[in-house]
Length: 443
Image 1 (cartoon, helix red, strand yellow):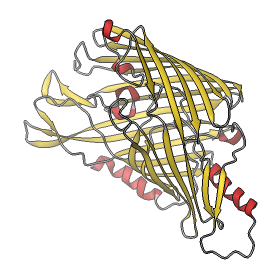
Image 2: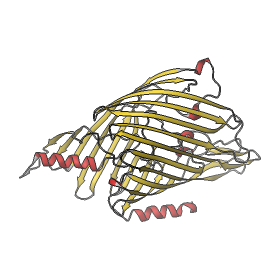
Image 3: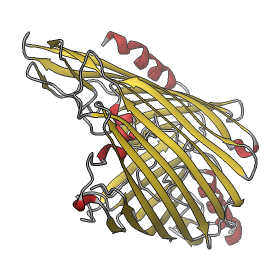
Image 4: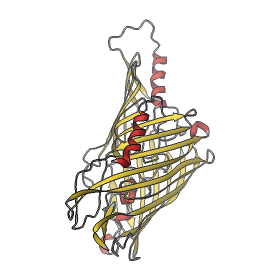
């Protein structure tokens, strides 16, 4: 626990400050002016002067200023119910999304395009595959409370239909959090993820070196220098997956993952930024030989960002390196490689080194309405003391190209090509290809 005293000291120090924050993500140009339907409701208050148009605009401004953009983020709600004094406003929105995909020259069993899951041999059963999927459709609620005591309070929750096996359409809670005075408490995208560092893809998974994942957390963020510099610190629920062997056993985790980041933004509406992030993990397991509990320290660092070269060209990137951080690298999430036993001494356990990077460019032919994007992403899992056999994962590659067209502010059409490959420790390599089209209607 000593190694985490600094982290908890910083978290305690952060709680002594309260100020508005710059939300993760960047502000993009709107397709059209945001004009939701706003229902003003009287709840017993007596107002001597009431200007309906001014009240509606105040409500709309609250939702615009608190909107978070970035990878897989929802649009602003189309329907808002608000009290006339604007102390409470509830937005209801969502979208229906249908993706149709065709795999060729290699097909994987996953509904998402995950290089880790590419089969290492091609045969009649996995040569081609067609899929139609609406499970990423979404419904969300967002409430904004203007409290005299706490200031502006945001409450957000959303669901999609990814809660079970493929095509089972069981509702799944994506996020459910409260944001107040710089704190985020609940379930949200992990703090290690830079939401604005990856372009949109039809593929729900996205680039395999990215780290979009949900987690339960307590997070604090604070902005300085007119919101150009933002720092954040979080304690998040640990998820540990390792290979224990005969001499070690899994036990309940006892220490949350600690995550820190610092981000500097510049340009119009602070659309460009660079972020440095770090994660430290204290992973508990039981030593069967000595009859004692022991720990392994996992750690990772990341450099990420989004640079608006001009209004017409955007660059996205992230690079991550660490040991024992499978939950924070897309392609390795859920794999048993946070740690493994040492083949040269099975009574020892060791964390596994891993890294990944992705870079992409987006050309805005008609800004906010029509754009083309493409990029490359790679993840590598390396041996340590000879651990990992010839048929285990070594590297995954992910290449994409797509085009998105906002036909209206509510209707989006898109087309995408994906190529991926998996290489095992033995050097054996196989690949897969996917062509997808998408239609999404926001409400």
